[in-house]
Length: 361
Ligand SMILES: [Zn+2]
Image 1 (cartoon, protein in one colour):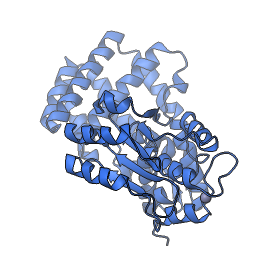
Image 2 (spheres, protein in one colour):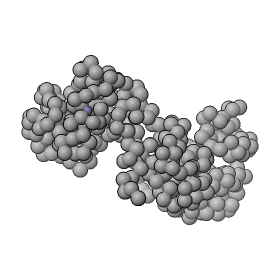
Image 3 (cartoon, helix red, strand yellow):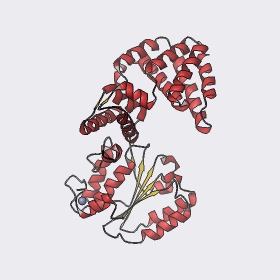
Image 4 (spheres, protein in one colour):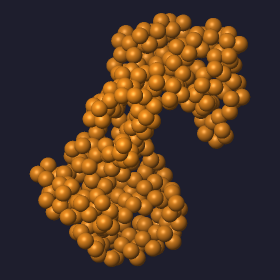
């Protein structure tokens, strides 16, 4: 049995293989082909959307000795192979979350003056760059103002709003999109096929919803579900392994809320939380449920917007009739408040229960 994780195995190695970010990969490939390579890039986007993968592909493309006609790195020449195996150390990944001080950036500034050892460009990929202290940002800015010709900086962040404008203005900015459910489903099915196992449509849909647009998360979920199933991933196994209560449980709970039956609502919430073991994901799922109700209530054909099995959509449509738009919005607002509260303190069961009581009011 191969010990390489599915995520590593199926990580894209060319611009063409990157899913869902064509607006970025096309531009970068074009820059490499026309030799209009910048010295500073800012990659923004939520986790698992491919920022680091694209940064690494770009780092190989700018150094590739046999660049393909479409701008993809060949992944076969000495430069590509050296960078892929790690024997060429001219692409440096720095995690700003743990190297965020001004001293680290000063070290980096000294380092930047050295010419690359084996390739044309030395590429610095600085992950989670928003975690830098302001003095570190100032030091970095000096480097970005006068970068040596052989250096390229790729700053990646999940929180672009925390990156100072002075830094942003020095960079070419790319915004990575959260992947669509259908992109994720298609990729999971492709991986399953290549690995020689099967996966039920509803199981891949479920993983897509849970991954919230992050391919990395989706593939790790696929991996854990796969190791627990024998050749065929069913929806039931997926729910079991990922600790997801069936949508019916949420439907039942929301009927209790519609009827203001506090007792039933509390009993059902407890059942769901005990199964998933996570109050925060419970609150998120419930919010998602009300969001889907809002869609069902106001659209005659919600199937394009809701990534759920047809029979669940039908049940949601029936349930939506029990609610006014006002009540749905009120429930969503209260859940949002609860989730925000949960980010500052742990979202405890007691907090959730008080929230459920409020929803029944
Ligand atoms: Zn190459």
